[in-house]
Amino acid sequence: MERFSQKFLVGGFLAILFGLLMLHLILPDAEASVSERRKLAKPPQLTLESVRDGAFFTDAESYLLDHFPFRDGFRTGKALYAYGVLHALDNNGVYLHDGAAYKLEYPLHEDQVSYAAALMERLCGTLLTENNRAFYAIIPDKNYYVAAQNGYPSMDYARLFSLVRETLLTPEEVPLADLLGAEDYYRTDLHWRQERLLPVAQRLAAALGVEIDGEAAYRTQSFGAFHGAYYGQAALPLAPDELLYLTSAVTDAGTVTSLEAEGTSGVYTPEAFDGMDAYDVFLSGAAALLTVENPLAQTERELILFRDSFGSSLAPLLLSGYRRVTLVDLRYIASSELEKYIDFDDQDVLFLYSTQILNGGAMLR
Image (cartoon, rainbow, N blue to C red; front, side, top):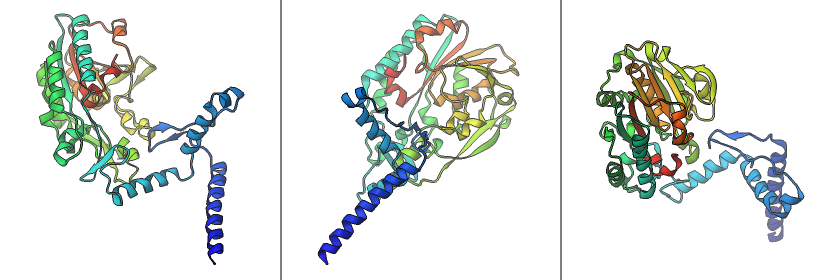
């Protein structure tokens, strides 16, 4: 009887392995994982050189792991086991609080923050003229409102703000942290919710000295259910957010041109909602240099916005105060190239960066 049990277990194990192998051969390979927001590994190239240097075996391992049958189901099972059985505080660096997902952001990298602040100060000295009016604002990541208060590791935000203030002397600070709370960010994503940003836009506009449209000018519309970046990283069956956006006569009329693409597009890009990152509906997502024109403007004023992805959803709310808003993302264009595309003279300038970007400031060029 014992020998039969052993044979049964071995046979069952081999059957599972064979079954998974057959499924791997039968099922078509996906090009990308929507839940993980990344492209999946392609089949390795078998060559004498790739075998000799070991690249074939490394690539084969990545390929097999990426295309393992029912991979997302196994990832969810692992996450449920980690949270429910092991009582782990996080899974893949993501933790849960009040039904929302948060990505651990620590420790503080002082050298990275100082580098980012020094770069912005240098740009003020080398690019801006006496006619430019310069400001900066820091967007706290949502851990700022939750992590330390609930016993999770947290970067020293007070030190981060202090480092920036000590280094960035030319532009004036516009504080934003007191206007925001955890509820102003998506539960399954890192970004803030555009429909809750009008107080932020109004404070920035007041500092910049421009008048922008108020709440009455906007209509709240929905793209539908939104699974943010943390949804896939947590690998848990979290309830989705709703991706809401604000439209007005100004956003409807606004036109966007990109350094990297031909033609023009609208302020919102509905077709991006079904892409790899639904947040790209705001100004078509990441881009080195964008120009947003407001044909309804009653002013000739212009704004240059140095930004990361958070700026994509805020810029439409500032557009009513300007004839043109130029968005610069220094992750994708070197600051030394900017004078080829922008004449700095008599524009408002706003440096708007999240704490995640400042804490990895070396990505700014």
